[in-house]
Image (cartoon, rainbow, N blue to C red; front, side, top):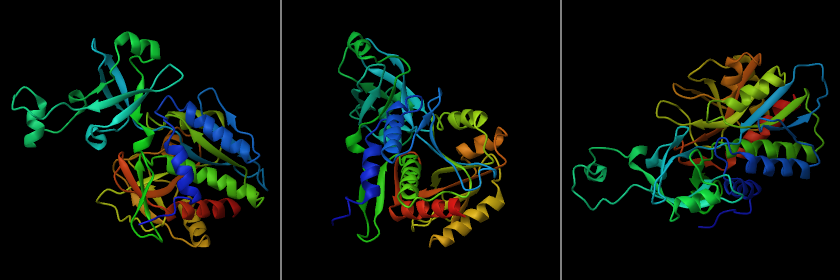
Length: 358
């Protein structure tokens, strides 16, 4: 079956997925976003923390400012030890599990100008040695955890040092296995990729800015479209940015996980978090976004999470905004090869456009 690989959103996803952007090393993604914003005729701002944003003055600048925010970082592995044979021990940066990755090629984002290739390994299962964890993996009595993994680099410690690899360097899957992949019905396909979270939010805000620019739309209230660092490390970028930039309303544009206790579906409708593990979001703001969705020709789904947080909850928890919400795209397979409906991104962009125009 053939799919619309020339779809503008698919093409932009492919570009975003090709950029390694682990927490703390978002500079490649930031540079791409700054260039994209400049090509649309806007000027990107960047702070010392690494956050990138663009300011759009509204029709009523005296009204409270709005921030719409995605995060640029992704889950990764962080190197904890360089062994004499050049193999590397790793542990997660953020909520990443080795069984989500599988044994796969990775690239190390290091202090050098280029990434360094390696391979995530779990070891051989051709053993019955009870001291070997693979014996227990094979019987199903034990799962794979990070202490059972390592990276093979094929390089010596000195060669790794010369390339800029050190303890604290981070690694992510190589771009060629990330996607995006299209499948399902040809007229309304599903899209999968390694970690849509949160390239989906970044795509939505870049395409929103593009649409606003092309039709010369001036939002009702002054608006900041933001791309934050280190969400996966503790909502760090958004907390810092909002401490230095006053906004009344902060809306995180992020993914919406689909655990079994949620009534979310991959049907093209965006989703709003009514509550996460930290707080209830502003219910009046949620109603405003739901109204905007209807005006855009779609409808909102709702979620309540026991174990989730977003940049919006971090900003609200810090007391840096009066109102907050999280809106985004439902996705299967948290923190792995995630799946969304391709059409949800156009519906999300249209909803945000209507919200800013109201």
